[in-house]
Length: 234
Image: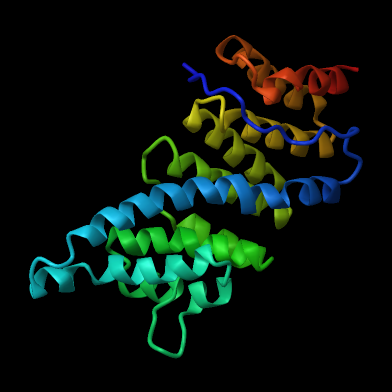
């Protein structure tokens, strides 16, 4: 059952899409904004909690090297220095690429794949973004996992793999199962379908958002969905 989370920001309304490029321009910043923010918040909590226990013993500290390396790379990421976050620097600070390679069997290494993909997305290198986002092993939680799928779906759209984009965004919406994320991904997937001329399929996804109406007091995603439904029902 969808969970009630009120007072969320809505994507801007606009006329029916005529070109795939319109979709790309409209949703590029969404990946760089809300999706990234969710991942940063959750990952930051994980890294912070690991860091608190690092001073017990030297041996224990050695075991925490991947997490400490992630903390340094995440600092660059939060400062929007994506090249350094990705590749590290001349002082020996590791970037996400090195962390993902050297600690591939750890949680930090897995998370580094996700951040590497997001760095490439920020840098408009969408082929590499897809490559690393696909490597991320689903965390199984209700925030990071849907957000990672949403990022991957957006990346697929940018490399014109539209069918994969639709299926991945739909999966992200279903996994999130909440009024905060699900409408975003359903609407994104629906607009890709519209750009492909698949209005009937888009309508089904918009109706899923409409069905969330009873779970929201003031979600503008839901409030505006009638416009989307009317657009594809013509």
